[in-house]
Amino acid sequence: MLTMNEYYNITKHHYMEASMEMLDHFRENVIEVHHIGSTSIKEVKGFNDIDVLVILKTITDTSELKEILVAEGYEIIEDFNQYFSDEMVARGKFGEFNVNFIFTPRGLNKKSQILVCKELLTQNEGYLKSFQTLKKRYEEKKINEEQYQKEKKQFFSNLLESAADLKGV
Image (tube, rainbow, N blue to C red; front, side):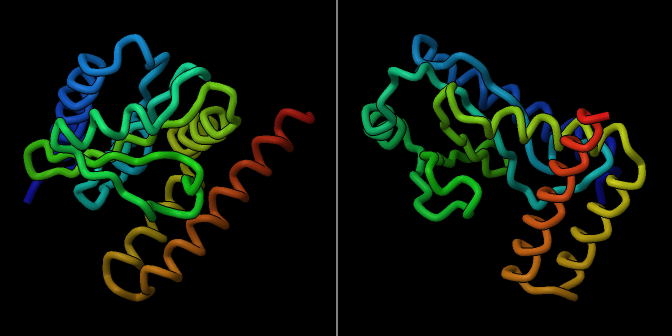
């Protein structure tokens, strides 16, 4: 069994490998690439999915990218999750991991929301422990997928409210 540090290093390697491959295909369309989700936080074990937020130029039409991605062997995921319902998600396999590329236009607020939540998790022990507990409950099948997604959504909503409260101080 891998240690948390080994797991994190493997996912970081696959994130870098996958991101470089994506940039090779879409260099002129991509503004930023961010490692997000559980595998981007050293103290949290994910579920063998690496999530990558890809910020596109606002003029990029994702339908054009979709054809290229499919031709390159990526699978387009139609129902990734509710939070990313407006984004196109393409999945590729790197090692034993699925890498989910979440394509979003530059103008949306999601990038800042995601990065704020990630920062709060990495800087606040209480938030981190709460998130680890939620993931553990799901991993141990104490809650089902639907309940996990509902509680995760509420958890991140609360984090964003906390961040807004901190800015107001």
